[in-house]
Length: 174
Length: 163
Image (tube, rainbow over the protein chains, first blue to last red):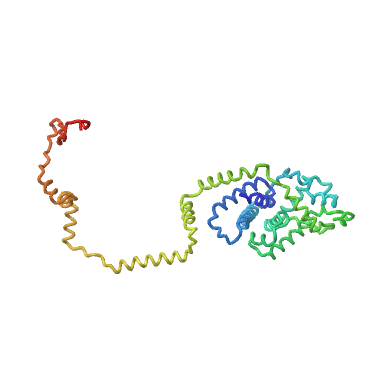
């Protein structure tokens, strides 16, 4: 159960919905308990559990399709003290002008437009800060595939979130 | 994909995009969420258990029982085949006893309850003879009143506290 916060973050950032996340997390732990006998110790427990979580969530997202509702008003007030956020605000006028709810909505909408496979990679690498090697093990793909998915997803997100790009006069400070 | 990226400038740099994405770390579940998670998982497991057929649960238990042996199913199959072959070989090597007519007759007598009462006994031979000498039971007249007879005599009428 000590992995729950990380699993929650993985599932939530892929679904953008707390109720779905709660449901999936229970499902994931039930699966883990059920198949713990099959865990051979060939990989770390952490990798094995994350693999179950990622695959369960990807399957759920593929079934769910485009029907989804976003959970809002879940932003922790700690974001206001976040160093990166203050830097972003200083560098980008649109970020400074947007309220937190709007910013959250835009980011979530952009992420939800990615395919589940790309979303999983972005969530693990950009949000959770996992190394490429771990992501490759969890998703059972090569590191090259992880990098190419990241590259493609970043290109799409950069375009979709371009409204938050610093205007020309500020871009030198970014 | 419905919404294709727009190739417009200015675009977010890689580092700015990553900084924006990292803001999602601040989206957290409600306070106290993890404290009740384990209870909810257990409840779901029980619900799942009730929904599943009994044979599936039994199969899972058997698998779980054999899982620590780390058994290769091919090896297990080979072992089972050797055992079956061994049993067959023993059956072939030791012929079945031929049952003759005299044995069949004696079995028939044993099968009869009256003869079995006479032939089969756990008592020693002397006791058997004494039993044979005992008087036959008298058939009671159903119209006669019921009488209770105590056959045995007490060893002593003295109270146990007297000695």
